[in-house]
Length: 497
Image (cartoon, one colour):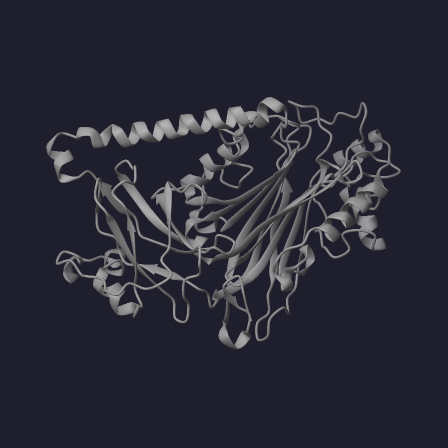
């Protein structure tokens, strides 16, 4: 059986396992844009140990501003939170894979570039629980995906508020569990994934204690005594909600409610509580001849952030995935320099036993892309191989004695020896309006927009005539045309509003 381009038969999969590191953040930002430096919250405060940075980030926010003017602005430009996260993460080689928003809840998934061709089946889902399921001010959003053959689900939630609404929080949880469904029959539900992480503003409170008693016990760091009256731990023990999940006991102070701009509790109307939590579950024996594992590396809050009445909470995990899953892949031959005002071609082939599907497409991306949805242009991928074979230019390879490892691996001759074909040829017509620069090609499957292959970077350069004329029209016309398209799109968006 094959699901999301992955073989689920253990006999067809190399069952050696490798580690992936996942970093999760949850923060209720009370409708405010990013003001403080987010690097420390992302575990990237100086000095950064590159060998220990995560493979994936799951970033969950609650109460993101959803004022009409902000939502209108986000139809034209990205929301300030994803921009702030991306500006930090792109420096370390991360790209945004997916995001979902339900009113004030946002969930972002970032990945190291090296992993994008090993992600399959990206899907999102959401559940409204406010006003009996009609309003999205409360509820849950999720992103599920397969990474190196293992299924992962991230859930960001914002459950009912106030001490007295315990039963509503229980109902919210069960509503999210019951209503979110996915295409894969083996991971149809949130909890049937190999790894599931549930984090967000769960809004569970502390019973019996007064606000003053809680503050006193926090000052003494008597967290175990407080946790005896924690509503979340009670409902887990009773099997009413979250009983499928595990949470390590918080060893940090309650993360709510603080005076904004300070690190002291505001007890005028609310008692301090651990409202912001990270829970997890996994299935160790999901596969024959392989045992999955999960190790929590840290679980804490970042008390130095003061722009919200909540403190951000983070946790990181080490999970086991297959080191060599049997995946459908596409391999591009190294692309020689493309020229403006000329037809430009690329050659590629599939992994053994794989073939194209109808409506697969090939996207042209900037070489330094920061998101997998920011293609410059695209064309449909051919469904039949080319009748000819790739032609090796005389200058296609660097002499062997001058090659370093990366140059040798990108040599056309080496690629032809590694992959037997059949070979497919794709042509971007000379009418494509582009500006010179460095680009990559992505082969993207019609099923879930899986990225099956990414080319090495290549140059899109001026034509010989343009160079001789000092740039000519090529430097102005495509750029002006691109600006015209952007302006037209902005006008159309405003008219739709």
